[in-house]
Image (cartoon, rainbow, N blue to C red):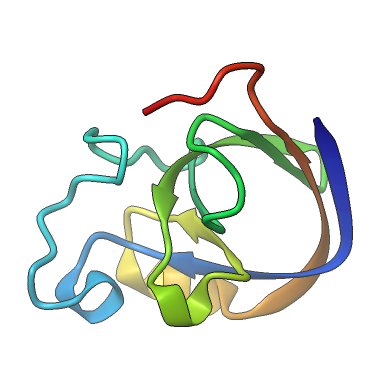
Length: 103
């Protein structure tokens, strides 16, 4: 399925305890180390492995957000300062879900 969200909230995070909480281990929800420019945390209504396109750049949804931010898309950055600089933006987001759910 292809979903186009015209006014999606897009934020940024890194693997630090400020962004991910005191139990941060540097591993995404799919069990891998996140990669800048590829990893994005996606809402729970989309399966992990979904492709997410924002302004022509394609990410792979391999992480989840905390439940209170579940309607956002959260782009991974290696640097906390880069994530903070990105801030909170409203963007057009296209989500392409895989044919088979990845567990």
